Structure formats: C-alpha cells, structure tokens
Image: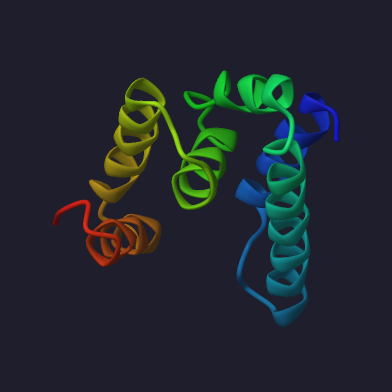
Amino acid sequence: MEINEFVRLANAHAEVGYDSSESVKRANRIADKLRSAMLEAFKDPAQTEQLMSLLDHPQAGPWIAFCALESLQLDPQNEAHCLRVVRAMASATDPSGAGAALWLSDRGYGP
C-alpha cells in the first residue's frame, strides 16, 4: 500500500462516527486494512522506515506506534518515539485515551 493511501485510510478512520452499526462496521473494515498494510510493510525495511516517518502524523502516527511496538524489535530511538506517541494519546480524557492507558499498562509500559 502506498504511504498516501495509508494516510488517507487513517484520516478516514478518524472521521468515522460511531452512531450506527454500519459506521462501526466501516471503522472496523478500515482498521483491518490499516493493520494488514502495516504488517505487510514491516516486512520491508524501506517501507518500515517510511511508516516510521509518519509517527507524528495526528491520525496515522498512533496506528503505526501501536503496531510497531507490538510487531517489531525496535531500536531504542524508535521505541521511545512510539511510546511518546502512545503516552500522548493516553493522556487524553476520552475513550481512546483510556484505551491507550490500558494498553500501556497491559504491556508493562507503566501507568
């Protein structure tokens, strides 16, 4: 998947409302595409580097950070960057923030 398509999907996922079962299904389909694209890209160092360059993108960055932390053996610099992204998300007072905080705690990255 091209990097622009990945960003487009991340943006589309961020815009999905959860007001109906159809919109939730749409969000889940997009999430599946994002995860699949990342896992495929992580097989190629050049594509991995392209994705990692998007860690500070407001919508794509969290997807990449979570998946990279779960799927890759990261060097200390990239691991720290991914953790900063997830911790920033965890500091929010919305459901996504609570989910990120729980994810960090479950994986031993602290409260």
